[in-house]
Length: 441
Image (cartoon, rainbow, N blue to C red; front, side):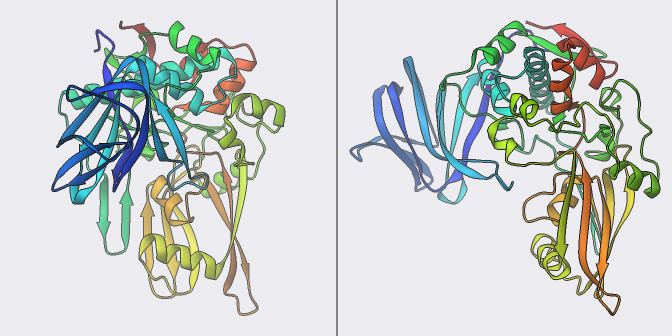
């Protein structure tokens, strides 16, 4: 396990034709000072850095810009919410080193080298409202720190990544996507890993305090740092790790009820329908807009309903989405049939039936991608049909529960627990059963 704070490499812009930004202050690049606006691009396999006058400052496979006297750097056109419905581009500022790498096919990758604790000072207020309840912010800081440390530890041991494709053959596609899919940096700055919006902006006091007061504190299980996962809202019951990623149970990532008293896990399609169409008194079942404003960042407030939600498609619309996202021409879409669910109601394997062919798809994220232009909020849904006079489906209505994969910490539920007076340790022990807290540095 870790004995000192690590420095991590965060991918901010990956494989761009041109990277543009500015140095606020000055930095050292190959023994020379750079300030003001800059651009970089790859020429003849080497990345070249130009200053504001267009003069070449440095050239190589890798260029490192080291800030002087607390200088920061700003990058333009940073994509956030990639492939989600809130996707946009922002101008973002960062502390630490800027590293520019020559990527394949003439592209440039921009990386921020920064200490783990400084990184968390941005992650915590980016993931949730930085003015949220302090005990929740502490719980989020410990969860984020633990996940990242566990990932770094696996990479250091060169354990390799399990195959992400479990099944890929005619008639069936079962894939899962872990957060370790990056090869030239440790984590990306977007939702695929953890939201990171830079450390040079004014970090709210509560978020800074949450990181400082939990410095070096990790979730640990059987002598190893926990691979602590988190999501926005479970919908009342969290999901088991094995139903979202590789098919092995992780004791501290088992399914738990998001409430003081346990709910019955989903075990059949009748259970799923009753559960998803119900309105249980779970921690993450929040309708009070004032409470939501206290716990969610502004970008997440745009989502609207998420504890229970509904999406309706005309049949032809869903056929077009499926063709675009899967590459499979189903013909006239006839049915969406869940074949396997987890205890939260999230579908693990779904059969899609059309007049031309049928196909089985899994796991939960692949299902969410196939059935939406961006992502469904979750794969915990039941299907309703409207039919035309000939009995052919004319509309598919998906009624769902929760937001995200559902494994580990339910962020909205944890924030509500904090509002009810629970301490960070109590919140974490509720979601990560069998884990313990340990200070490592």
